[in-house]
Length: 176
Image 1 (spheres, rainbow, N blue to C red):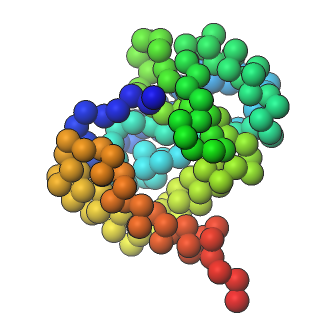
Image 2 (image 1 turned 180 degrees about the vertical axis):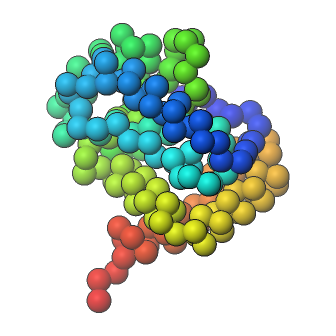
Image 3 (image 1 turned 90 degrees about the vertical axis):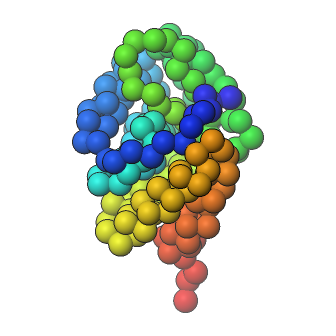
């Protein structure tokens, strides 16, 4: 299981998150760069100006799942433990077990056409491009963090309608 946050804490955007992502990305590339298509910074920490929980979300993008066994071996050497899909099809989770000063992060390996990856990119890009949506999402996150301070599951569930509204404007947009 990914490490659960004991207290939901949303903090102002920190420009250092970009550099922290780059450090993690470089570590990943060193061990499995030849097996993957890209390493993407996703989630709220990837959206400049957006308050977030200070945990970096990372999607490692692969062509297809045939390379997963080699990726598991490579990431184990890099200090990660494979956790399976944790009940979410189309992404494989890894937990950092090595203590080496890297910022807390969630690492997922996803096929390039996987639902989870495509949704992460659509949400990230929409929030990066839409100031009003970014402000609205930040207000929602801050309100939920206060209300569900000790309940990260409810905090996440209560964000779902907002996220789905963005996805319905992007990758799930109805064709006329």
